Image 1 (cartoon, helix red, strand yellow):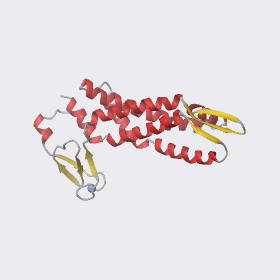
Image 2 (cartoon, helix red, strand yellow; image 1 turned 45 degrees about the vertical axis):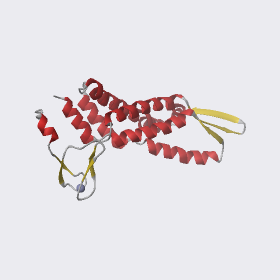
Image 3 (cartoon, helix red, strand yellow; image 1 turned 180 degrees about the horizontal axis):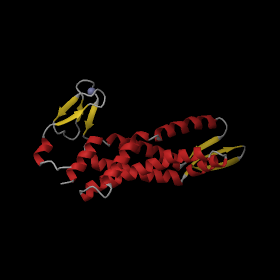
Image 4 (cartoon, helix red, strand yellow; image 1 turned 90 degrees about the vertical axis):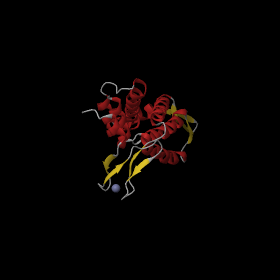
Length: 212
Ligand SMILES: [Zn+2]
C-alpha cells in the first residue's frame, strides 16, 4: 500500500455505516469521542482515552487471572461428609471420562484456549506498536486473527452457565467457591473491557501510521 502523505491523516475520513450503508465523513477524532451514523445512530468508530495503555493493561491482567483460574481450585463441594475439590481442568477431565471427550475439548477451546490466544494476540500487536513503534512480525495476520476471534468470545456465557449449575448443585451439596472461580470472574470483566476498547478502525489506523 502507498504510504499516505502526513496532511491526509488530519483530513476527513469516510466510512460506510455497518448497519445502514450510509457513507459518512468525519474529521480526525479526539480521544474520548466517537463517530456516530447520522441516520441510524450506529457507533462507527470510537477513540478511547489512552486506548493502547488500557488495552495492554486489561489484556495482561486478564491473562494473569486466566492462568490463575486454570491452576487454583474452582470449587469444592461436600455432601454426606465427603468433600471434593475440583479445578477447571479436572472438571473437563471428568467430562472426558464420561465419554464426552468432544464436549470437553470444545469447552476447553472456548473458555481457555480462544480467550488466551486472543489476549496474547492483543498484547503482541498493541505491545509492539506501543513499545517498538512498529508492527511486529506477522502483525497483520495476528491482528486479522484476533479481530475475527473477538465475536466468538463466550466467556460470559460460560460464567452464566456455571452460575445456573451452581444454583442447582447448591440444593444437593454444600459448595464453596475457590480462587479459580473468582479469578475467572475477574478475567471475564477484563476480557469484556478489552473487547470494548478494541476498535477495528482505530487499531488499523495505528498499524498504518506505524508503517512510515
Ligand atoms: Zn447508519
